Image (cartoon, rainbow, N blue to C red):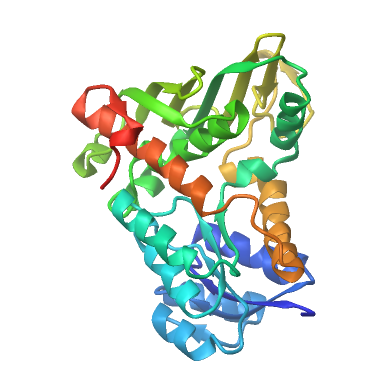
Length: 344
């Protein structure tokens, strides 16, 4: 296999970023067709990337191009993830899908069952922080015992307030703050603590953008969780950060502490002016994890060529999904929720 031939579905904000990486930065990949329901996005793929096979219907693209393709790249809305993965697998395609695995646990379990029929196919979920050099290094230090036994993860995903109106447009097809945002943090906690979430207690509300409440969602939420091995994790999701996108994580161990990204700085310039000493911050999650998104795509392509299993597969995605659903259920029902009870 000289190149991995890819069908890409979804050309919104994230889809275009993925497409640019695959087309312009990964010689081992070839995007042979794209799909979007938005004509302007189709035109962009044609005029900017030079893609010739353009579709508005996802099923039509897969049905017509599956014989020419090796893989499917899904950057669609969350409510289309599970169906898209199953469609790809049943047509013999390796699949990369942006997180999360789906909306509800029922469809996620269906994906798990279908994937077992195709063990030779790579299904990678987009938990991009695992590919970030800083997070990878922190995991190496933990595995080397540098901080002793980790017992607490404090992790947050907070978006710049100016992106809230954009997020509100997609709240209807999303899974809520915990599923759309903190599922990354849940996956990191599992990874760093070496255990699965046991129970969750969550709180939150619409403190600034009441429109999220129309979809049963919130603009800020927090949760305290316990894991099977007795360790703990604290999560924060916010859509109202005034300074920019601010993702950071802290891991407490018996012999040390690791802190990742606590200053969301855009660069290493410090500004000294009448307001004091400050630095500018990144504004979006893509700015913060731009390198990781590229490394993630390279890894997916390389593992297909080499026949290797994915770094973040169905089981990782399923367990993170159960954790995020438990967080959401606790928030809505105002009670502690046990992950073992998340079955449908």
